[in-house]
Image (cartoon, rainbow over all chains, first blue to last red; front, side, top):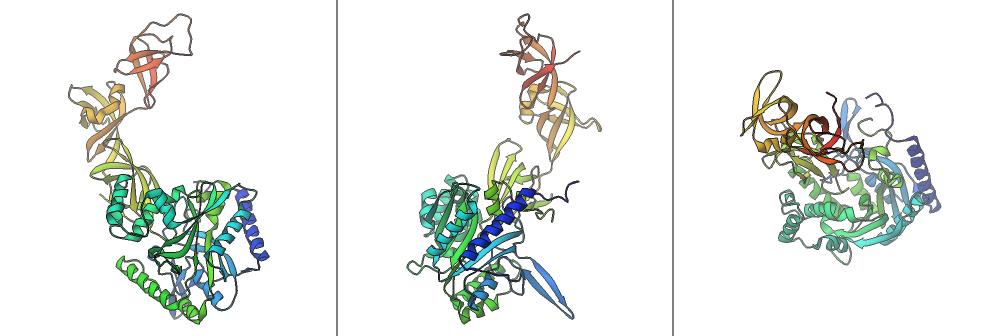
Length: 326
Length: 189
């Protein structure tokens, strides 16, 4: 192709991106949230069995080290929080290997922020306020919606996401012309939830509105805290607009033992699935041992946010050089 | 045959699914940030022509299907089979009515068309996008009518019936778009 050197997005889109960055910085500056920058390269990696990282070689003769490109700035930012930074935010690149599609580019831009002293409901208020500011003047949104995962899952599928019933889930898949779900998901509850949620629930969420889904099933807790009143759910929130997943937030886990246990569990799953070996974040564990303040945090995908602001059908329309032109 | 992983599923790729040869139409990568990645794929079954949607776990693979499109010339109908020939090699293939399907109403002896072969056996036949066929039967037109509204049915030499403008007469040769079944123009002899 003759025009392969050119950006896939318009010059107008470069301006929109700059404006969004500017609006974000003003929003947090007015709230005394500190902008920080953390390394993209790290000696440790995530252990999440669903994520693939990029690795690179760091040469400092005579030795050579494997370094990992971050899949999110979460670990480094939590180390800053434990060191007493107070509330912080960051706009940075994150990298996830193998993820490419209409809504994915292996290198993408995140806004991640942490609020010391916030529980999940306060963070959700702030997410709604920030998105309100960013959409203002671009697109009028309907009022923000908040649903518990159980409520919204049950509404669209009639299934209870918190109790795994193999029979019911299989019957649902067959009734909805997705018999392949049975062989894909087997007896894996979390996998069933991923399948059904992404096919039958997510596309319905947030018709021209911010839709926040909180209280994820405990088997999908990731780095969130288990709810103090109901051990079946976790204090995790996801943000959707027009069925597009925009962000994922937690009332952060602060217990180093629990964190270590989850890491080990995930490493074991990675081994079973023969995924590339990960290196446990020992600095994060040490930071949690020293004491992570009570806080909530979230990451928002800024490329997808731009897609929604500009009504774009593909992430290529908002990136200047997506992976195939990078 | 090689096998193909979900990230190689591009439009047009021919794969085996449920023992039938299929063509990929569309492939969408679906991944919850913290969850399992899937590929939602639209696939056409090349035997039945039906389009289905199927979800795969990302990284799963399908066996490739030995399906090729070959330009051939239609020779004749022996009553049971239709016979086709590859012009370069004179190699001949016979197709039953099931494989010929809808194409039968556009096929005239000596016309070129595309025969899709699966493991070297005819799977389907596609006529050329445009064919020129003679009208064997149509009502006489009204004098003075040059074009426009309504039209009338006309039966072509292959048996197909298309709507033609009123001025087009029996015995004339017309050009037809086989994808829509619409009349395009008269063909000057």
